[in-house]
Image 1 (cartoon, rainbow, N blue to C red):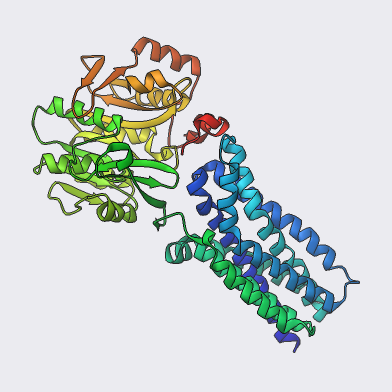
Image 2: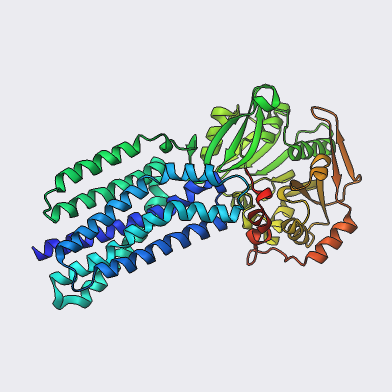
Amino acid sequence: MTLTRQAAYGLTLFLTSAAALVVEIVAGRMLAPYVGMSLYTWTAVIAVVLAGLSVGHWIGGRLAAPQVAHQTALRGIALALLLSGLTAGGAAPLLKGLAALLGGNTSPLLLITLLAGGVFLLPSLFVGIVSPVLTKLAIDDAPDRQGPIIGRMFALGAAGSILGTLSAGYLFISWIGSTGTLLAVAALYLVFAILFWVGTKTKIALPLAALVLAGGFGLAQMPGFAAPCERESDYYCIRIVDFAPQSGRASAAMVLDHLAHSINDRDDPGLLYSPYLHFVALRTERLLQGRAPKAYFIGGGAFTLPRAWAARFPEAKLTVAEIDPAVTAMAAKAMWLDPAAPALDIRHADARRTLDILPEQQRFDLILGDAFHDYAIPPHLVTREFHQLLLRRLAPGGAYAINVIDQSESPRFTFALVKTMQRDFPAVEVWLDDESRRRGGRVTFVVLGLLEPSEAATLRASEPFRRTWLRWPQDDLDARIAAADVPVLTDDFAPVDRLMAGFVLRPDEMLR
């Protein structure tokens, strides 16, 4: 009997520790549609979960005191697991409610912290109570084996945490989604809560079990459990938003996590609503003078420019590295992309790795960087080592263009990127559409890495939109970069999130 109880205590600790880490991984994914998935998001999530577990362990230690009776300890575990299940199961609707309540003008950094703490502190706290009490019960069963039992229980907890991390990241989220995963965790907690309560032989055990199951089922039917994503992939929460009210035409925008990435027009692929894409297309086409482009796209999103060029230049050679196949599938399903277009070569892999393994002789008229992880560009795609790889892939007269979201007043990341590119590109320019320049605040720069500088400092378009783009005067840009004292970005040191901290510290810069 002792052996059976020891196995039961160990299995409970193993699985509840796994579930606690599943909640941690899921927390980051669930916060992404509201605040993005940045370094700050993960910092807040990890800190909140660790804080909850720490407080829970302290409370559990009080319940594990020698004078606490066996039945009392069992009831404590059952109650802690019941509360763990209820708080984990209710996280999805609570998150929606808090996000709606706190959104507004709350500082993004404060919002991230409040949402993470308000939703995920309690599930971690309650499950943290369990392990000290389980360890006490195991020792009470075999007091002469105190050391081995403590070691075993610590090991089982750590092993469970590893399993939870791996299963959440590699299995459950992509299989049943974040909300489904949380409900599965809640169900696990509630089942163990019932088993431990039954073990207390309390007369209300069966009614309580029925109440818990009914409550769990009721939670699952709440409207708040509807996922905010149309599709949740291994990388993003993907939504398609109708853009027709803004454009007056059949059109749609793709939203990845909480950032709109692309807008496609159903009937006219060449209608480029985003000024930065319009600029890149216009500049490239003028240089090519009617020749079909050869281009490499770092990030696909809704494939707006590849789709436009594939329709206009069927003989073009357009290689697109989109790491998430679910993004491509959604673009094909809801944004009128034809992945089988002859001009398109779609690679579902990391853009840097893909570029490195392409045939050595393959060169491009344009390489366009348009990959984001939340508001920031992945660090390995902005370093000097990557730029050296890009230079080897440019055809004569070719250009590297990268889309950068930054503050107009003090774009420190843009300054660092330009400073880094200047180490290797003969000419580096920063362009901005005139409307964004006059509006200020958050803007989208286009940084160009060129073999030869542009002849003009202004580019104008009259169709399909009347737009003007201006080049940042080089003397002023160089002086601002020198005054900013920003680092050169390398594979060893590329503090992208720190350089873009202004977004997180200023509510008016929050990306929606």
